[in-house]
Image (cartoon, rainbow, N blue to C red; front, side, top):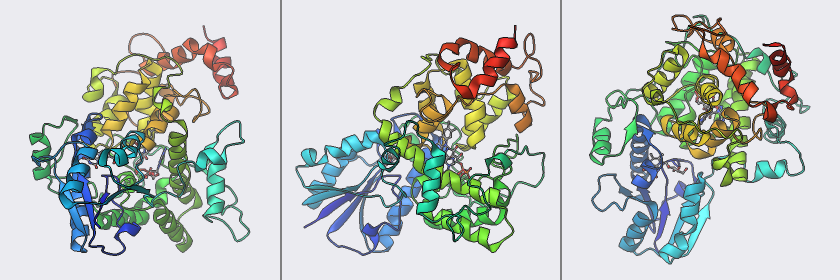
Length: 488
Ligand code: FAD
Ligand code: DLZ
């Protein structure tokens, strides 16, 4: 009896138990569909990367004996939605059952829950065998807590998975968290590691995406494409990061520089989020490198915290708070995104650089996303849902389960402080300290008001003034309000 099994574009996990042996009665179905390309306007590189990685994954499965039915975006039989294509394949092969891996997005989960009724077949949902937690684990962990705190969850995960612990179960180096050491500005040294990622020519895929009239944003770089498209490339990228980036990761994690766009970040989020590599294998490799010596604990702990802590935590927040989460708007912000979010064409140099880089690379690192673009969006009062859709489209690693809590919660405080204990906003002083973007800017970071003053300064104080009824009682903001009280 034939079974049809779905593999989504972010389920490219070669180590999934589905593939441990070849079963002639199983047909895997993969599809490039408008329902997935069009739910927001995606960056061109993101669509190319997903299609290229999906096609490579199908090749890998076929080369190991599995049967794959692959629907391209220009296939005339393509129904352009998940269930329509699944039904067609089910009928073609006379399937007696259908199976899918737990999807990571609420929207897709809802669609696939209707599969049994739609297909009139028995349907199974299995684990994607990627994450270290189940969808509900974070909510269960905090069931009796008044406040959810990532740090508490992270320490539990360190203990549970025995990560960076002494034999007595204490944190290696004596501290659980070395964030205080991870706020260095970067002044040109040590040198940014060379980008060793291979070059790909994806002109043909790009031509097909255009032929199908998929609307995208940003630079396609189709003939010189650098994102990993299979597990082998992702593992090579991990090796390169461990050899050259990790040793400086922590110290310069928050630094920004106009022509060193990644500094010591790993660029591994795409490979992780489409499941080419697993979080646990990355964590174990990082630990192994630490135990070989020569790398300080702050770098290793800082990196592991992002994956073992934040990545699993935000996923738990997503599943605990959806579907209402996406509509949260604590401050009632309604302004549309300025046109220059799609061009980078603004005189504010920090924003022009961060948005310009995002359009060019489909990538910006955490602090560019949080403290430049997100900072502006929150201070300016942009509609958080529109901000969310922009982030969901533009970044190579953007999938709603991880993007939404980071954007709406951490960056826009639209959930009223569920994820962040205070709004992540700053005036120009922080941007000037952590980046080189104020040099050569049309505005003066040190000038607070008047002609030529950096808009971040007045916007910062205006934000706290206009939101005083909502924020003054937050004890983490008492310094801010004391200062505001002294200001005319
Ligand atoms: P590194 O700095 O090298 O970090 C290593 C890994 O840690 C990342 O690959 C990622 O898997 C994980 N990680 C780091 N920070 C976070 C975090 N806050 N939440 C979850 N995982 C984290 N990350 C995404 O993967 N997808 C998104 O759509 C996304 N949207 C974001 C939106 C905003 C507004 C902000 C502030 C952050 C967002 N992040 C998102 C988190 C973070 O910015 C990216 O994971 C990181 O920049 C990816 O680059 P990297 O692989 O070089 O990361
Ligand atoms: C992001 C994306 C895009 C652009 N296109 C496809 C696609 O054509 N086919 C597919 O299976 N997946 C795609 N994806 C990733 C999905 O949106 C992702 O699988 C869901 O968001 C579930 O997390």
